[in-house]
Image (cartoon, rainbow over all chains, first blue to last red; front, top):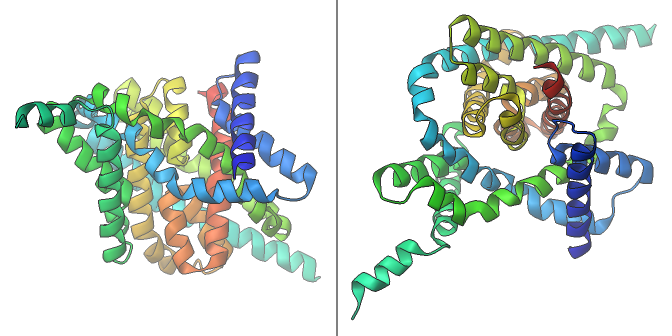
Length: 118
Length: 233
């Protein structure tokens, strides 16, 4: 467990370091995630301690986003001003986006599969 | 007995925000499970709504709340790094599907994001709203970290992603039926791209293949958007 936490923190700080070093506007955590993913691919297996730590940490990810989300109390004017517009934008993009994504994937899978069968 | 002093110590305690967050989240989890996982009763929504109510209607300010709940926010970074683990575990599933997966993520993802941003822009939404809308197809944790750098607001990004997640999970099954989308991998991917974490939970209820693909496309979209958006926007 402890080893897994050390790995996660090390990759997180490594990501922050790289983001600063190259002055990339990318969150360090995302770079850390990418690096860890590449590391796991190269290693070819998942360390038990890392699996254990991520399994204990990830179910609480929704909890970790709560404090930042509560910050909306300081931006209620944004919702008053643009709330309807934002809602319409999201509903329209969802109603079109979900079928498009599913249809596209299904279409490519089918034509790809046929191509292979020949 | 010193009731007033004791109560005021409790109210001023640096642990109060942490306790309130955990309590409200637990309440959310309880309601969510009791109602058979209704997307609109998502624990995050219940928790955030009740904390907002407390902050608006009591003299607990957001900054004092945040000082206390900071600890939870700080775990966000390492937890995002941990997302590499399920990504790695599900990665072998992509072997046969990778081309279809990448293409539909990139094309449909770009389509929904640009469409949503265009609507807010053309509807003359404020600049902050337009900037924040760019994060709509990223899982909340990453959206929160990315939004400020794009000129948006982290909390609004969280609210938008939450809204898409809940609404998307609610309407996805009817859309799948209407448009005859029955391939499990396609269903999962569509839910992951458009409805993120809430959609992934929903996809898992439909089946393990749907769940795995939703998780994959959630991580993939998160990574892709976080790597590209800061340079494009």
